[in-house]
Amino acid sequence: MDVDVKSIVHDVFTNEIFAQELSDISKEIWTNPELGFKEYKAHDILTNFLENYGLTVERKYILSTAFRATFETAGSENGPHIAIMCEYDALPDIGHACGHNLIAEVGIAAGVALKTAMDDEGNKLTGKLTVLGTPAEEGLGGKVKLIDAGALETVDVAMMAHPSNKSIWRPKYLCLQGLNIQFTGKASHASSAPWNGVNALDAAVLCYQNISCLRQQMKPTWRVHGIIKNGGIAPNIIPEFSEMEYFIRAPIKGELDTIVDKVICCANGAATATGCSLNYKLIQPGYWSLISNNTLADLFEKNSKTLSLEEDSGLVRYGGSTDMGNISHIVPSIHPKFDIGARCHQHTRDFATAAGSPDAQEITLKIAECIALTAVDILQNPSLVQQMKSQLQEDLVQEHSTK
Image (spheres, helix red, strand yellow):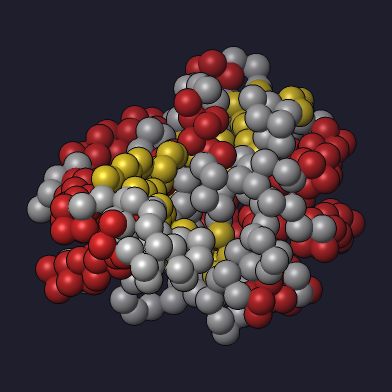
């Protein structure tokens, strides 16, 4: 007997016990923030939940705080393989000010709902589901490490959602490359024999100023921001060593390479002017821009309307960067942002408060349902996968352009 698969998904989300479980898990992760690659408690909470709902769980998958939870139908090799991502790391000092407790909640809720629909005897869905726990998004690139280890090799489509102060189904995230810059000079007494010294702090200051002068020629969508991490040890010693760290961002990879080269030229100029030697290195992993697959995003948008979810209108500005961008370059992906009622930006104490508020629960569950419904669309129409993959290849051509 044919069944309405989407009604099965919806019924999961109308279960008050299920909703309370999810709220409790989100609150527990929020109350116990853990930094990247140290999310031991969150790892255990999430994997226990998924296992209790019948998914096959691999704990400590590749990384000590990553996990993989799977479910597949008979003949799954002939259907799409859909991955739903969880994040659950926090920020230093300000906790879940990026709302990753809610990202984890979306991922496990959508995963359980989709598993329930795939497992129903009356439907004809064929495929595989993976709920992938990806630690250390905040600058440490957990997803990049999982990509490098082959965790995405058989995945056809990847989805996740991120809390925000706006609802945007196709958000813009920038490529990110970290750059460490070190200048080495020569120490000397700063009063009795400064002429014998070579001032590495001067080199760092000149480098900072060179980059500031460069801003006039930067495109409005480029971002370069950094700090001087080491500027000397005492005022009466000419600094023989200085160190800087920069984050460099641009909308596409081609532009990022251009601006990285320009910043390195700024450092070389400072070294030449001061007589210091220069060492620099690119901080790995870098983050790639987010490519929102339009076919996949269209499905999400269509389902969002059935759930009375409204996208904010107006200009979509570039935000930060995410390692979900790296996944979006190898697998058709979406990473919609959803408004949890915060009237502030992420990475603030106020946003952390909003992420832990009961007021965030209703939309978080609706977004999870929307992701599950989108996955159902793909399983019911597997030919969409090839369309999404073809579109990704077209997007990648533009991504590597410098124009």
